[in-house]
Length: 103
Image (tube, rainbow, N blue to C red; front, side):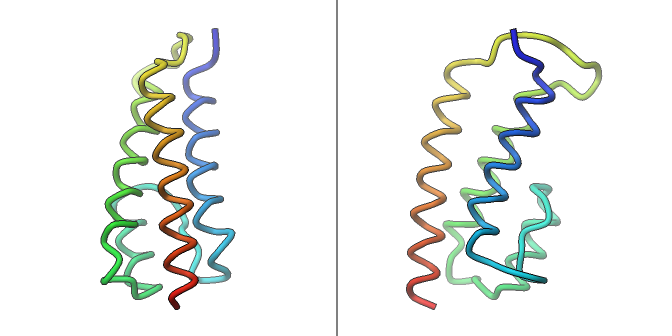
């Protein structure tokens, strides 16, 4: 059994690293809260790329579902959430790469 909070942290770091490998300094995404994602969008000026922001919000919700903040719990990772997260990470990587190639 895996620690669900650690699963969440690892998943969040994976999302952030996909974005931040392409953006540097003040243009890096600082977190997966909705305000952090919206600030990042304004900072990098990607209003035209709402798809990336939408993917980030979905991935943030998936990451959040990995852990219950009310108490630390130990339970196996839900395979459906894990698969959705993996698909979302690949989709995000492709979208960010395409955006960076265009700009």
